[in-house]
Image (spheres, rainbow, N blue to C red):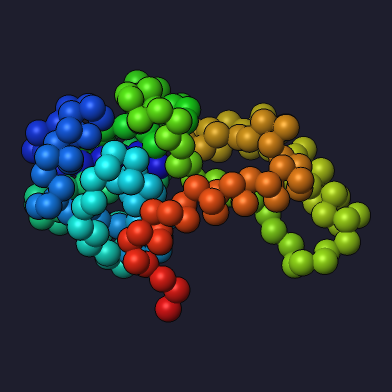
Length: 201
């Protein structure tokens, strides 16, 4: 994800955004693709990290939220890089920070929130392949191996990285790693989700 704001928000980098949000949190609003969406949860984690409780405005998609941000009715969105990039390139919005621990290849000059003072902040979009509980290990391992081979294919890697994605290194592709990673992600997001009051329908 990347943090993008309306162009007239008085913040040119993440530290300025952080200070502005803390000082103006009672009158600020952020948009998302709906309660519980990735864009919502990522902004909740960000807000918790900077110590600013900001009003959430849910939309059915961030495509529907964007006109309101361009018009100044909401202040920022935590947007996937793939859909945020064209808006940045057209100068329709202001890019403030990359929200994963590492910069993205399609926006190499956009520093991460971690680099700009929010130490160890990491909220990447990630994808994994899941099977039903109890799937035979032989099938799990065979699919894992096939997927890993595909990710190492130069053409596939180039296509993914060209879309702003980062291919996981080999040591982060095993079923055991994924099982532990999912638990750590649940723990990371649990507190801000609970504090927000969002719940399953």
